[in-house]
Image (cartoon, rainbow, N blue to C red; front, side):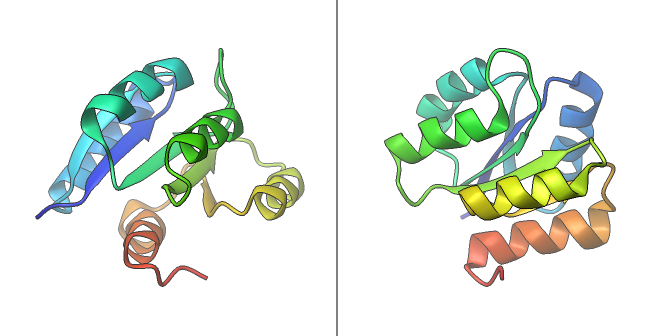
Length: 124
């Protein structure tokens, strides 16, 4: 059975690039373009993993992650950001405990590795 992944990014092109890559990797993928839409897709799709941008209008990735964890406490979530202030992102990541990567990320090495490790429970 394929793992199900929900990709959330307010930039259409980025969401579609990540979705196509993950589909080629063998995952079943859905896309949402903001946190509110993601909550609706989440209810219907029931993904194993949610990959979300941090900075989005209407609802940030951290807010979305909080809402998802209310629905399913052990929901697997990876956050991504296009902003280079890694110190801020690292502090947020530590505070919230979510794996993350900075966009643009190398799909074959960085994204593929993090997704696999989070899904298999081997991410450190």
